[in-house]
Image (cartoon, rainbow, N blue to C red):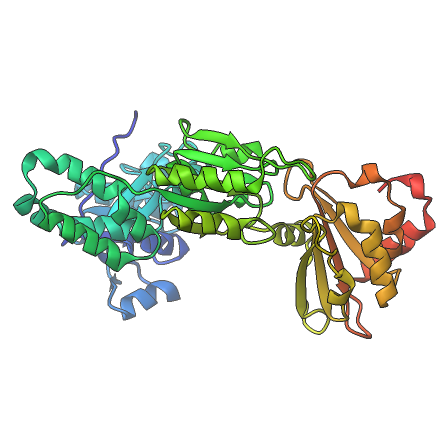
Length: 473
Protein backbone atom coordinates (compact mmCIF):
# COMPACT_ATOMS: atom_id res chain seq x y z
CA UNK A 1 0.00 0.00 0.00
CA UNK A 2 1.14 3.51 -0.77
CA UNK A 3 -1.54 4.99 1.51
CA UNK A 4 -2.66 3.80 4.93
CA UNK A 5 -6.44 4.03 5.51
CA UNK A 6 -7.45 5.83 8.70
CA UNK A 7 -10.52 7.64 10.00
CA UNK A 8 -9.96 11.23 11.11
CA UNK A 9 -11.93 12.39 14.13
CA UNK A 10 -13.93 15.55 13.35
CA UNK A 11 -15.83 16.18 16.60
CA UNK A 12 -14.87 19.62 17.94
CA UNK A 13 -12.43 20.25 15.08
CA UNK A 14 -12.24 22.55 12.07
CA UNK A 15 -11.98 21.54 8.45
CA UNK A 16 -10.94 24.35 6.10
CA UNK A 17 -12.13 24.40 2.49
CA UNK A 18 -9.98 26.69 0.35
CA UNK A 19 -12.10 27.80 -2.60
CA UNK A 20 -15.56 29.17 -3.24
CA UNK A 21 -16.84 27.51 -6.41
CA UNK A 22 -18.16 24.11 -7.52
CA UNK A 23 -15.03 22.18 -6.55
CA UNK A 24 -15.23 23.57 -3.03
CA UNK A 25 -18.97 22.82 -2.92
CA UNK A 26 -18.30 19.17 -3.83
CA UNK A 27 -16.05 18.79 -0.80
CA UNK A 28 -18.52 20.63 1.40
CA UNK A 29 -21.27 18.16 0.46
CA UNK A 30 -19.05 15.30 1.53
CA UNK A 31 -18.11 16.94 4.83
CA UNK A 32 -21.71 17.74 5.72
CA UNK A 33 -21.97 14.06 6.71
CA UNK A 34 -19.56 14.80 9.58
CA UNK A 35 -19.89 17.02 12.65
CA UNK A 36 -16.82 19.11 11.77
CA UNK A 37 -16.85 22.90 11.93
CA UNK A 38 -16.57 23.96 8.29
CA UNK A 39 -14.63 27.07 7.33
CA UNK A 40 -14.90 28.19 3.70
CA UNK A 41 -12.02 30.45 2.76
CA UNK A 42 -12.51 32.45 -0.45
CA UNK A 43 -13.09 36.05 -1.42
CA UNK A 44 -16.40 35.05 -3.03
CA UNK A 45 -18.50 31.93 -2.62
CA UNK A 46 -21.26 30.47 -4.80
CA UNK A 47 -24.93 30.30 -3.85
CA UNK A 48 -24.75 26.74 -2.51
CA UNK A 49 -21.93 27.58 -0.12
CA UNK A 50 -23.62 30.83 0.83
CA UNK A 51 -26.67 28.79 1.77
CA UNK A 52 -24.58 26.68 4.14
CA UNK A 53 -23.21 29.83 5.74
CA UNK A 54 -26.68 31.34 6.10
CA UNK A 55 -27.92 28.11 7.71
CA UNK A 56 -25.11 28.23 10.25
CA UNK A 57 -23.54 25.02 8.97
CA UNK A 58 -20.35 26.76 7.77
CA UNK A 59 -18.33 29.92 8.41
CA UNK A 60 -17.19 32.16 5.57
CA UNK A 61 -13.65 33.59 5.75
CA UNK A 62 -13.30 36.22 3.01
CA UNK A 63 -9.92 37.59 4.05
CA UNK A 64 -6.37 36.47 3.30
CA UNK A 65 -5.51 32.81 3.91
CA UNK A 66 -2.75 32.58 6.52
CA UNK A 67 -1.14 29.87 8.59
CA UNK A 68 -3.13 31.13 11.58
CA UNK A 69 -6.39 30.29 9.77
CA UNK A 70 -5.16 26.77 9.14
CA UNK A 71 -3.45 26.20 12.50
CA UNK A 72 -5.00 23.23 14.35
CA UNK A 73 -7.34 22.23 11.53
CA UNK A 74 -8.04 18.53 11.09
CA UNK A 75 -7.90 18.74 7.29
CA UNK A 76 -7.61 21.26 4.49
CA UNK A 77 -9.31 20.83 1.13
CA UNK A 78 -8.06 22.88 -1.80
CA UNK A 79 -10.26 23.52 -4.83
CA UNK A 80 -10.05 26.98 -6.33
CA UNK A 81 -10.13 25.91 -9.98
CA UNK A 82 -6.75 27.62 -10.57
CA UNK A 83 -3.70 25.33 -10.73
CA UNK A 84 -1.32 27.98 -9.43
CA UNK A 85 -3.52 29.02 -6.54
CA UNK A 86 -4.13 25.39 -5.60
CA UNK A 87 -0.38 24.71 -5.44
CA UNK A 88 0.30 27.80 -3.31
CA UNK A 89 -2.55 27.06 -0.88
CA UNK A 90 -1.53 23.41 -0.56
CA UNK A 91 2.01 24.51 0.33
CA UNK A 92 0.64 26.95 2.91
CA UNK A 93 -1.49 24.26 4.55
CA UNK A 94 1.42 21.85 4.59
CA UNK A 95 3.57 24.53 6.26
CA UNK A 96 0.88 24.76 8.94
CA UNK A 97 1.18 20.97 9.39
CA UNK A 98 -2.35 20.34 8.17
CA UNK A 99 -3.01 17.31 5.91
CA UNK A 100 -4.07 18.49 2.44
CA UNK A 101 -6.43 17.17 -0.21
CA UNK A 102 -6.40 19.05 -3.53
CA UNK A 103 -9.19 18.40 -6.02
CA UNK A 104 -7.95 16.49 -9.09
CA UNK A 105 -4.32 17.12 -8.08
CA UNK A 106 -2.95 13.86 -6.62
CA UNK A 107 0.57 15.33 -6.72
CA UNK A 108 -0.51 17.91 -4.10
CA UNK A 109 -2.40 15.50 -1.83
CA UNK A 110 -1.35 14.20 1.57
CA UNK A 111 -4.72 12.48 1.90
CA UNK A 112 -7.29 11.30 -0.63
CA UNK A 113 -11.04 11.10 -0.19
CA UNK A 114 -12.42 7.58 -0.64
CA UNK A 115 -15.75 6.46 -2.00
CA UNK A 116 -17.97 6.16 1.08
CA UNK A 117 -20.80 3.82 1.99
CA UNK A 118 -22.57 5.65 4.78
CA UNK A 119 -24.53 3.70 7.38
CA UNK A 120 -23.58 6.06 10.18
CA UNK A 121 -22.11 5.05 12.61
CA UNK A 122 -21.01 2.24 10.27
CA UNK A 123 -18.89 3.72 7.49
CA UNK A 124 -17.11 1.82 4.72
CA UNK A 125 -14.39 3.65 2.78
CA UNK A 126 -13.08 2.42 -0.58
CA UNK A 127 -9.83 3.82 -1.91
CA UNK A 128 -7.84 3.18 -5.07
CA UNK A 129 -4.93 5.53 -4.24
CA UNK A 130 -6.19 7.85 -6.95
CA UNK A 131 -5.57 5.35 -9.76
CA UNK A 132 -9.14 4.23 -10.56
CA UNK A 133 -11.90 6.36 -9.02
CA UNK A 134 -14.51 4.84 -11.34
CA UNK A 135 -13.66 1.38 -10.02
CA UNK A 136 -14.00 2.73 -6.49
CA UNK A 137 -17.51 3.90 -7.28
CA UNK A 138 -18.41 0.52 -8.76
CA UNK A 139 -17.23 -1.23 -5.61
CA UNK A 140 -19.22 1.26 -3.55
CA UNK A 141 -22.36 0.33 -5.52
CA UNK A 142 -21.85 -3.37 -4.78
CA UNK A 143 -21.38 -2.72 -1.06
CA UNK A 144 -24.46 -0.47 -1.04
CA UNK A 145 -26.40 -3.49 -2.33
CA UNK A 146 -25.06 -5.71 0.43
CA UNK A 147 -25.59 -3.48 3.47
CA UNK A 148 -29.16 -2.98 4.59
CA UNK A 149 -30.18 0.72 4.55
CA UNK A 150 -31.29 0.45 8.19
CA UNK A 151 -27.97 -0.98 9.43
CA UNK A 152 -26.74 2.34 10.78
CA UNK A 153 -29.82 2.94 12.91
CA UNK A 154 -29.60 -0.57 14.35
CA UNK A 155 -25.88 -0.23 15.06
CA UNK A 156 -26.58 3.08 16.83
CA UNK A 157 -29.27 1.38 18.94
CA UNK A 158 -26.82 -1.37 19.88
CA UNK A 159 -24.22 1.26 20.75
CA UNK A 160 -26.62 2.99 23.13
CA UNK A 161 -27.14 -0.31 24.94
CA UNK A 162 -23.46 -1.23 25.36
CA UNK A 163 -23.39 0.10 28.93
CA UNK A 164 -26.41 -1.97 29.90
CA UNK A 165 -24.86 -5.06 28.33
CA UNK A 166 -21.64 -4.50 30.31
CA UNK A 167 -23.68 -4.22 33.53
CA UNK A 168 -26.05 -7.18 33.07
CA UNK A 169 -24.60 -9.71 30.64
CA UNK A 170 -21.74 -11.80 32.09
CA UNK A 171 -18.43 -11.22 30.35
CA UNK A 172 -18.08 -14.82 29.03
CA UNK A 173 -21.50 -14.53 27.35
CA UNK A 174 -21.02 -11.13 25.71
CA UNK A 175 -19.44 -12.25 22.45
CA UNK A 176 -22.27 -14.69 21.87
CA UNK A 177 -24.79 -12.03 22.85
CA UNK A 178 -23.48 -9.54 20.30
CA UNK A 179 -23.46 -12.25 17.63
CA UNK A 180 -27.12 -12.86 18.44
CA UNK A 181 -27.85 -9.12 18.25
CA UNK A 182 -26.64 -8.78 14.65
CA UNK A 183 -27.83 -12.14 13.31
CA UNK A 184 -30.96 -12.90 15.31
CA UNK A 185 -34.64 -11.95 15.43
CA UNK A 186 -34.05 -8.39 16.66
CA UNK A 187 -32.04 -7.53 13.55
CA UNK A 188 -34.60 -9.33 11.37
CA UNK A 189 -37.40 -7.28 12.93
CA UNK A 190 -35.49 -4.03 12.47
CA UNK A 191 -34.91 -4.79 8.77
CA UNK A 192 -38.64 -5.36 8.32
CA UNK A 193 -39.31 -1.89 9.72
CA UNK A 194 -40.33 -3.02 13.22
CA UNK A 195 -37.79 -0.87 15.06
CA UNK A 196 -39.79 -0.80 18.31
CA UNK A 197 -40.07 -4.58 18.39
CA UNK A 198 -36.33 -4.86 17.76
CA UNK A 199 -35.52 -2.51 20.66
CA UNK A 200 -37.86 -4.42 22.95
CA UNK A 201 -36.20 -7.75 22.06
CA UNK A 202 -32.75 -6.33 22.81
CA UNK A 203 -33.81 -4.82 26.13
CA UNK A 204 -35.63 -7.98 27.20
CA UNK A 205 -32.56 -10.07 26.37
CA UNK A 206 -30.28 -7.72 28.33
CA UNK A 207 -32.63 -7.79 31.31
CA UNK A 208 -32.53 -11.59 31.20
CA UNK A 209 -28.74 -11.53 31.28
CA UNK A 210 -28.31 -12.82 27.75
CA UNK A 211 -30.26 -14.26 24.86
CA UNK A 212 -31.42 -17.60 23.60
CA UNK A 213 -29.31 -18.62 20.63
CA UNK A 214 -32.17 -20.49 18.94
CA UNK A 215 -33.08 -18.83 15.69
CA UNK A 216 -36.63 -18.84 14.37
CA UNK A 217 -37.10 -19.81 10.76
CA UNK A 218 -38.21 -17.37 8.10
CA UNK A 219 -39.71 -17.96 4.67
CA UNK A 220 -39.12 -15.17 2.18
CA UNK A 221 -40.99 -15.14 -1.12
CA UNK A 222 -38.46 -13.16 -3.15
CA UNK A 223 -39.02 -11.55 -6.53
CA UNK A 224 -36.09 -12.36 -8.81
CA UNK A 225 -37.19 -9.76 -11.35
CA UNK A 226 -37.59 -10.42 -15.07
CA UNK A 227 -34.09 -11.79 -15.58
CA UNK A 228 -31.23 -9.30 -15.28
CA UNK A 229 -29.65 -9.66 -11.87
CA UNK A 230 -29.01 -5.94 -11.48
CA UNK A 231 -32.79 -5.43 -11.42
CA UNK A 232 -33.09 -7.22 -8.06
CA UNK A 233 -33.94 -5.02 -5.10
CA UNK A 234 -31.41 -4.52 -2.33
CA UNK A 235 -33.66 -6.47 0.03
CA UNK A 236 -33.81 -9.38 -2.41
CA UNK A 237 -30.00 -9.52 -2.57
CA UNK A 238 -29.81 -9.42 1.19
CA UNK A 239 -32.25 -12.31 1.58
CA UNK A 240 -30.23 -14.37 -0.92
CA UNK A 241 -27.07 -13.72 1.07
CA UNK A 242 -28.76 -14.74 4.32
CA UNK A 243 -30.51 -17.84 2.99
CA UNK A 244 -29.71 -21.35 4.19
CA UNK A 245 -31.71 -22.88 1.36
CA UNK A 246 -33.11 -21.44 -1.88
CA UNK A 247 -35.97 -22.94 -3.88
CA UNK A 248 -35.98 -21.48 -7.39
CA UNK A 249 -38.06 -21.93 -10.54
CA UNK A 250 -37.16 -22.46 -14.18
CA UNK A 251 -37.44 -18.79 -15.16
CA UNK A 252 -34.84 -17.56 -12.66
CA UNK A 253 -31.65 -16.60 -14.48
CA UNK A 254 -28.54 -18.48 -13.21
CA UNK A 255 -26.79 -15.10 -12.82
CA UNK A 256 -29.28 -14.24 -10.07
CA UNK A 257 -28.25 -17.29 -8.06
CA UNK A 258 -24.65 -16.07 -8.15
CA UNK A 259 -25.70 -13.37 -5.66
CA UNK A 260 -26.55 -16.00 -3.05
CA UNK A 261 -24.32 -17.17 -0.23
CA UNK A 262 -21.87 -19.74 -1.60
CA UNK A 263 -22.78 -22.43 0.93
CA UNK A 264 -26.54 -21.98 0.59
CA UNK A 265 -28.39 -25.09 -0.53
CA UNK A 266 -30.09 -24.65 -3.90
CA UNK A 267 -33.17 -26.68 -4.86
CA UNK A 268 -34.66 -26.49 -8.34
CA UNK A 269 -38.45 -26.69 -8.28
CA UNK A 270 -39.15 -25.46 -11.80
CA UNK A 271 -42.43 -26.57 -13.32
CA UNK A 272 -42.83 -26.96 -17.05
CA UNK A 273 -46.25 -26.17 -18.46
CA UNK A 274 -48.32 -29.35 -18.42
CA UNK A 275 -45.79 -31.26 -16.28
CA UNK A 276 -46.18 -32.19 -12.62
CA UNK A 277 -42.65 -33.15 -11.55
CA UNK A 278 -42.94 -30.54 -8.79
CA UNK A 279 -46.61 -30.19 -7.87
CA UNK A 280 -47.44 -27.13 -5.85
CA UNK A 281 -48.46 -28.99 -2.69
CA UNK A 282 -45.04 -30.63 -2.57
CA UNK A 283 -43.30 -27.27 -2.95
CA UNK A 284 -45.45 -25.77 -0.19
CA UNK A 285 -44.65 -28.66 2.17
CA UNK A 286 -40.92 -28.40 1.49
CA UNK A 287 -40.49 -24.67 1.94
CA UNK A 288 -42.65 -24.53 5.07
CA UNK A 289 -40.92 -27.60 6.51
CA UNK A 290 -37.44 -26.15 6.03
CA UNK A 291 -38.44 -22.85 7.67
CA UNK A 292 -39.97 -24.79 10.58
CA UNK A 293 -36.48 -26.23 11.24
CA UNK A 294 -35.25 -22.72 12.02
CA UNK A 295 -33.68 -22.15 8.62
CA UNK A 296 -33.73 -19.04 6.46
CA UNK A 297 -35.64 -20.12 3.36
CA UNK A 298 -35.92 -18.17 0.11
CA UNK A 299 -38.57 -19.10 -2.43
CA UNK A 300 -37.13 -17.32 -5.45
CA UNK A 301 -39.75 -16.47 -8.06
CA UNK A 302 -39.37 -14.86 -11.45
CA UNK A 303 -40.70 -11.31 -11.61
CA UNK A 304 -42.83 -10.36 -8.62
CA UNK A 305 -44.11 -13.11 -6.27
CA UNK A 306 -47.57 -11.54 -6.10
CA UNK A 307 -48.24 -11.46 -9.85
CA UNK A 308 -49.45 -14.72 -11.42
CA UNK A 309 -47.46 -16.88 -9.03
CA UNK A 310 -48.58 -19.34 -6.40
CA UNK A 311 -47.89 -17.04 -3.48
CA UNK A 312 -51.30 -17.54 -1.76
CA UNK A 313 -50.73 -21.28 -1.32
CA UNK A 314 -47.17 -20.78 -0.10
CA UNK A 315 -48.18 -18.06 2.34
CA UNK A 316 -50.94 -20.29 3.70
CA UNK A 317 -48.52 -23.22 4.09
CA UNK A 318 -46.09 -21.09 6.06
CA UNK A 319 -48.78 -19.76 8.35
CA UNK A 320 -50.15 -23.27 8.92
CA UNK A 321 -46.64 -24.40 9.92
CA UNK A 322 -46.34 -21.48 12.33
CA UNK A 323 -43.31 -19.89 10.65
CA UNK A 324 -42.77 -16.23 9.84
CA UNK A 325 -43.24 -15.33 6.19
CA UNK A 326 -42.65 -12.22 4.11
CA UNK A 327 -42.92 -11.09 0.51
CA UNK A 328 -40.00 -9.26 -1.09
CA UNK A 329 -41.39 -7.60 -4.23
CA UNK A 330 -39.59 -7.71 -7.54
CA UNK A 331 -39.59 -5.89 -10.86
CA UNK A 332 -42.24 -7.54 -12.98
CA UNK A 333 -41.84 -8.31 -16.69
CA UNK A 334 -44.45 -5.71 -17.62
CA UNK A 335 -42.35 -2.89 -16.19
CA UNK A 336 -39.12 -4.29 -17.63
CA UNK A 337 -40.59 -4.52 -21.14
CA UNK A 338 -41.88 -0.95 -20.90
CA UNK A 339 -38.36 0.17 -19.96
CA UNK A 340 -36.70 -1.95 -22.65
CA UNK A 341 -38.93 -0.55 -25.39
CA UNK A 342 -38.80 3.01 -24.05
CA UNK A 343 -42.58 3.25 -23.76
CA UNK A 344 -44.55 4.28 -20.72
CA UNK A 345 -47.41 2.04 -19.62
CA UNK A 346 -49.69 5.06 -19.39
CA UNK A 347 -49.92 8.37 -21.19
CA UNK A 348 -52.08 11.32 -20.26
CA UNK A 349 -54.97 11.73 -22.64
CA UNK A 350 -54.21 8.43 -24.39
CA UNK A 351 -54.16 5.56 -21.90
CA UNK A 352 -55.03 5.94 -18.25
CA UNK A 353 -55.63 2.30 -17.27
CA UNK A 354 -53.35 -0.77 -17.17
CA UNK A 355 -54.89 -4.26 -17.09
CA UNK A 356 -52.88 -7.37 -16.20
CA UNK A 357 -54.18 -10.82 -17.10
CA UNK A 358 -52.75 -14.24 -17.93
CA UNK A 359 -52.85 -16.60 -20.86
CA UNK A 360 -52.78 -19.63 -18.57
CA UNK A 361 -55.42 -20.88 -16.18
CA UNK A 362 -55.96 -23.83 -13.87
CA UNK A 363 -57.02 -27.12 -15.44
CA UNK A 364 -60.80 -27.28 -15.62
CA UNK A 365 -61.29 -23.53 -15.29
CA UNK A 366 -62.86 -21.60 -18.18
CA UNK A 367 -60.42 -19.67 -20.32
CA UNK A 368 -59.98 -16.02 -19.34
CA UNK A 369 -62.20 -13.64 -21.29
CA UNK A 370 -59.39 -11.35 -22.38
CA UNK A 371 -61.55 -9.31 -24.75
CA UNK A 372 -63.75 -7.97 -21.97
CA UNK A 373 -60.74 -6.27 -20.39
CA UNK A 374 -59.76 -4.31 -23.50
CA UNK A 375 -61.30 -0.91 -24.02
CA UNK A 376 -60.24 2.41 -25.53
CA UNK A 377 -57.89 4.29 -23.24
CA UNK A 378 -56.31 1.15 -21.79
CA UNK A 379 -53.10 -0.87 -21.94
CA UNK A 380 -53.71 -4.62 -21.83
CA UNK A 381 -50.84 -6.86 -20.69
CA UNK A 382 -51.15 -10.64 -21.03
CA UNK A 383 -48.58 -12.79 -19.24
CA UNK A 384 -47.73 -16.32 -20.47
CA UNK A 385 -49.49 -15.52 -23.71
CA UNK A 386 -47.65 -17.78 -26.17
CA UNK A 387 -50.14 -20.65 -26.45
CA UNK A 388 -53.15 -18.36 -26.61
CA UNK A 389 -51.99 -15.70 -29.05
CA UNK A 390 -54.14 -16.81 -31.98
CA UNK A 391 -57.31 -17.05 -29.91
CA UNK A 392 -56.41 -13.82 -28.11
CA UNK A 393 -56.07 -11.95 -31.40
CA UNK A 394 -59.37 -13.26 -32.78
CA UNK A 395 -61.30 -12.42 -29.62
CA UNK A 396 -59.90 -8.90 -29.41
CA UNK A 397 -60.71 -8.15 -33.06
CA UNK A 398 -64.23 -9.55 -32.54
CA UNK A 399 -64.57 -7.21 -29.56
CA UNK A 400 -63.86 -4.26 -31.87
CA UNK A 401 -60.15 -3.70 -31.43
CA UNK A 402 -58.80 -2.50 -34.82
CA UNK A 403 -56.85 -5.27 -36.53
CA UNK A 404 -54.20 -2.80 -37.73
CA UNK A 405 -53.54 -1.58 -34.20
CA UNK A 406 -49.96 -2.37 -33.19
CA UNK A 407 -49.20 -4.81 -30.39
CA UNK A 408 -45.85 -5.60 -28.83
CA UNK A 409 -44.58 -9.09 -28.05
CA UNK A 410 -41.69 -9.57 -25.65
CA UNK A 411 -39.60 -12.72 -25.16
CA UNK A 412 -37.34 -13.40 -22.15
CA UNK A 413 -37.36 -9.73 -21.19
CA UNK A 414 -34.14 -8.25 -19.71
CA UNK A 415 -32.13 -11.45 -20.26
CA UNK A 416 -29.40 -12.07 -22.83
CA UNK A 417 -32.10 -13.70 -24.99
CA UNK A 418 -34.46 -10.75 -24.77
CA UNK A 419 -36.22 -9.47 -27.87
CA UNK A 420 -39.35 -7.50 -28.65
CA UNK A 421 -41.37 -7.22 -31.85
CA UNK A 422 -44.13 -4.83 -32.89
CA UNK A 423 -46.80 -5.92 -35.39
CA UNK A 424 -50.49 -5.45 -36.24
CA UNK A 425 -52.91 -7.38 -34.05
CA UNK A 426 -54.38 -9.14 -37.11
CA UNK A 427 -51.04 -10.65 -38.03
CA UNK A 428 -50.45 -12.49 -34.76
CA UNK A 429 -52.60 -15.49 -35.68
CA UNK A 430 -50.25 -16.23 -38.60
CA UNK A 431 -47.19 -16.73 -36.36
CA UNK A 432 -45.74 -20.23 -36.31
CA UNK A 433 -45.56 -22.17 -33.06
CA UNK A 434 -41.73 -22.17 -33.15
CA UNK A 435 -41.84 -18.36 -33.15
CA UNK A 436 -43.63 -18.38 -29.80
CA UNK A 437 -41.05 -20.24 -27.72
CA UNK A 438 -39.89 -18.82 -24.42
CA UNK A 439 -41.60 -16.65 -21.79
CA UNK A 440 -43.85 -14.39 -23.84
CA UNK A 441 -45.52 -11.13 -22.85
CA UNK A 442 -48.26 -9.50 -24.93
CA UNK A 443 -49.00 -5.77 -24.84
CA UNK A 444 -51.90 -3.99 -26.54
CA UNK A 445 -52.30 -0.22 -26.29
CA UNK A 446 -55.79 0.84 -27.35
CA UNK A 447 -55.82 4.64 -27.43
CA UNK A 448 -58.81 6.78 -26.66
CA UNK A 449 -60.88 7.80 -29.68
CA UNK A 450 -59.00 10.26 -31.88
CA UNK A 451 -55.64 9.51 -30.25
CA UNK A 452 -52.55 7.74 -31.61
CA UNK A 453 -50.01 6.27 -29.21
CA UNK A 454 -46.91 6.44 -31.37
CA UNK A 455 -47.01 7.16 -35.08
CA UNK A 456 -43.75 5.32 -35.60
CA UNK A 457 -45.50 2.13 -34.52
CA UNK A 458 -48.12 2.62 -37.23
CA UNK A 459 -45.36 2.95 -39.84
CA UNK A 460 -43.87 -0.32 -38.54
CA UNK A 461 -47.30 -1.95 -38.71
CA UNK A 462 -47.85 -0.88 -42.32
CA UNK A 463 -44.42 -2.20 -43.30
CA UNK A 464 -45.08 -5.56 -41.66
CA UNK A 465 -48.49 -5.86 -43.32
CA UNK A 466 -46.82 -5.37 -46.70
CA UNK A 467 -44.08 -7.94 -45.99
CA UNK A 468 -44.45 -11.70 -46.67
CA UNK A 469 -45.23 -13.88 -43.65
CA UNK A 470 -42.02 -15.90 -43.95
CA UNK A 471 -39.82 -12.81 -43.71
CA UNK A 472 -39.39 -13.55 -40.00
CA UNK A 473 -40.21 -11.47 -36.95
